[in-house]
Length: 120
Image: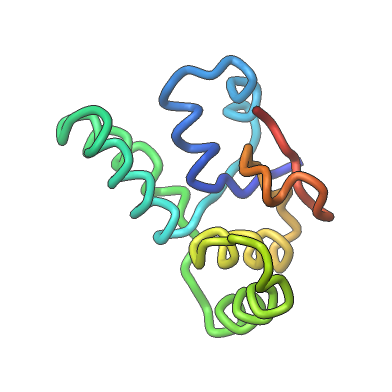
């Protein structure tokens, strides 16, 4: 199984959450928007040096964003307007569906959705 890591998953990996360690053995991907949120979180909570280090480590896992990804993500966000999904997470979830990747997250909003591996 291959995975799409959302921002939550990326942060938990850096924090050393043992529940996420096994996912590093699989092929995994993310989007530039998730990487942007990830960088900001690390910059805020750690340091610029740490943020740049991990940004560089995950940068080669970024899937380029295509028009279809935006269309599918926007439809998903519109269909779920009562939930508090971020734009980045909607995009990531759509990309995961399009590429046949399991969406890895600990975000409770995604817990019961199809194609999600929910890990705390």
